Each structure stands twice: as C-alpha cells, then as structure tokens.
Image 1 (cartoon, rainbow, N blue to C red):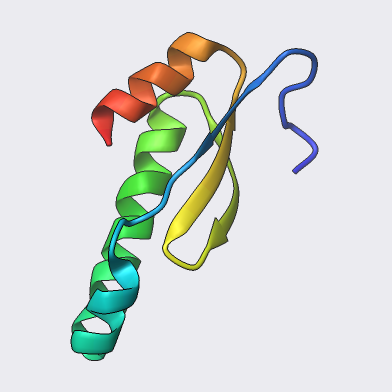
Image 2: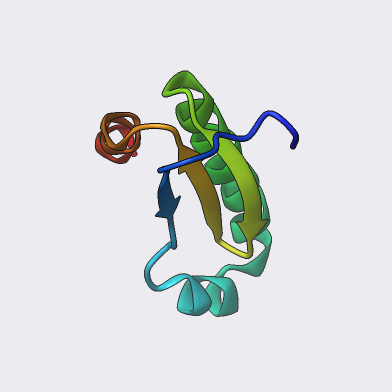
Length: 77
C-alpha cells in the first residue's frame, strides 16, 4: 500500500444495513452476495481513483485523493 494518497484525503466507509438479520436468515446466500458486493465496490473504488484499504465484514474502508472522487464513488454505490 505504498502508493496511498497523502496530505488531505477523503475516507469512505460502507456498511450493509440489516446484514446481521440477512446472515441469520440466509447464511449460504449471503456468502456469495458478499463476495459479489466486495467485487463491485472494489471496481467502483478503483474506477474513481480510490484505494481499497480494508474490507470489514460487510463493509469496506476506502481512501480518495479528492472529495469529488469520493462523491463520485458514493453516487455509483
């Protein structure tokens, strides 16, 4: 991760609302859904010049050099 932006940056955190109940009700389906979710978000982050810092359960942590890049990512979500 040595190519991460420095200086003033914008962080973006995501979370799937209600995922605990979905995991309890549909554990097998959630495995594949979460994998697809992570893939889609990774692609959206990178296409907006962001960097995926970490996946955390059903969410991601990303960083962007500019606030406009982070907003464009958020709108794509």
